Image 1: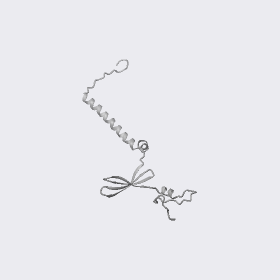
Image 2: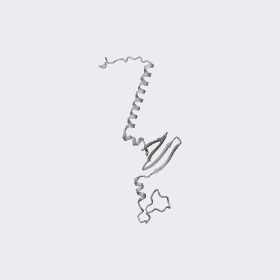
Image 3: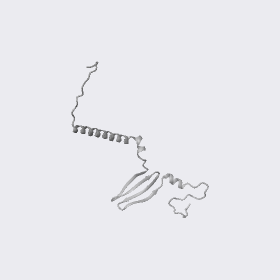
Image 4: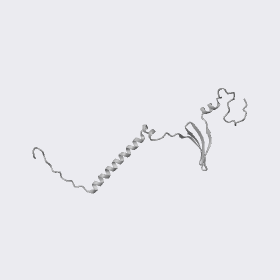
Length: 130
């Protein structure tokens, strides 16, 4: 002890290369695992889902099986609806369905016109009985 300060000598600790390598890979595995858990947590948060994922506009609202691998699907895109058939031969559009609001807008006469509203199923140029 000199001048009231204790002096100690460092004792070297013998380590092997195998234990050093094990410690490095263990730490790396731990950090990668924590990063993975953090990523899963962030993806589960509802406040980030809008920023990460785009809003899906296309929805299959209903599906009916018609027979052997043939199906009828009601597909919506925004406010439009489509009736689609799928079979082993392919996919085909059956009908472009209109919403109730679209049907009401078509049946309303144009203000100031003397023409009766045309039914959507009537062919153009045909007379309608009143």
